[in-house]
Image (cartoon, rainbow, N blue to C red; front, side, top):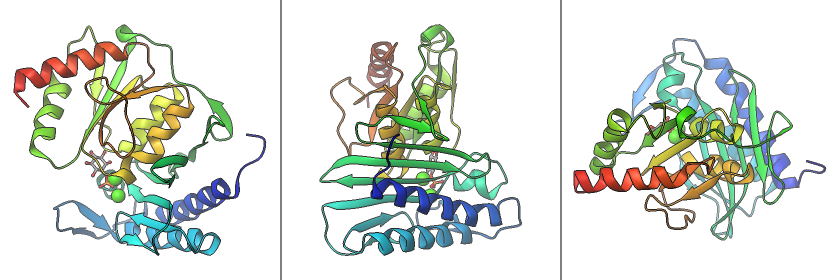
Length: 265
Ligand code: IPD
Ligand code: CA
Ligand code: CA
């Protein structure tokens, strides 16, 4: 990218600062606490979010920030930052290096910046509207692999029907559609790995905007395709979608439709 906007510079700075917090705690005996929704949080989730908010508010005091740990911060604004201070907390807390900081900037319901950073592998992904997607400052594109060689990941939130469909896709997705289906436990990485060409598709079932906004935007800027589960156009903040390299997207849509009909959901 020739010149980065101030917004992108700030998002990058915030993710790098948050990354330092996560590095400090990673592979230590960090205390895990249970949140109301039964998911876990650690001291690092809270500290990381505070650092990100500080960096963003210093640069853009008039913007608002939706953070997983602290909800909506700041006044009403057309600019809303969607922040997951640690995506993949369970991996992080169990010393598994599949976690990331995820930060997206949304202007009037349109994503314009996305940054995903995994400090444990120093993997930095970012994109800016119309400027392409980058991994450690190198332009990236989705893969050209077809179904035969394809790897798919699937991520779900807390809804019961989403869990039923998630398990069905994970265990019964026909081999002819993808050679491997998995759940990495970090939705933001699922998405940026598609953008970088390491995975071919990710199906998202009911996560929160801070989980997917940055990653899905990075896929779009890397030349990928994103639709609703039934193949109709996807629009932020819809949280059920198929994101892929586009090569066998229609097959994925057809198969998800079939599975949903079979399960009657
Ligand atoms: C989790 C991850 C994971 C998904 C979970 C999310 P968190 O986010 O994105 O991939 O399966 O449903 O809660 O809680 O680690 O930020
Ligand atoms: Ca998350
Ligand atoms: Ca989180």
